[in-house]
Image 1: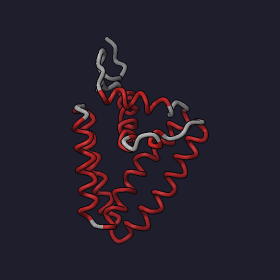
Image 2: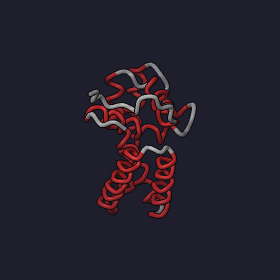
Image 3: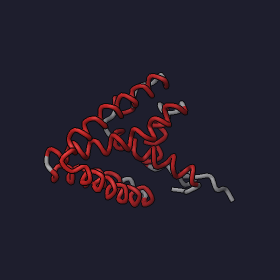
Image 4: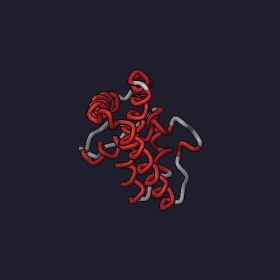
Length: 153
């Protein structure tokens, strides 16, 4: 039995096409490693910055993001994103009154690493051509984690 994690064989789902395109500019192992850390950090920082603006702005952002993920029709990704969202919001709440400076610092540092990764890769970030790739990035991280764990999605 094949235990390699991957999309289901024979499918041509939108999520498969998005991830395949995203992976084209994320093949270098150093760039991939950077993304595995920086993408979750950027998501945390964005939610934190929005939370500092007003908590309901952050809640609206995560709700809209979850709708995007739900529309991709991949239950494993949606369930993981739901759990991740709870953890993200808990981390933002834990920052308390430091949410703005901590989130801003994380945002700047994580993006610097992202651009260093793309310099190493020699390719521009995918979101430069389509903004939706900002939401595909977290799916890329999940897909890599699922592959390493042998989970079919």
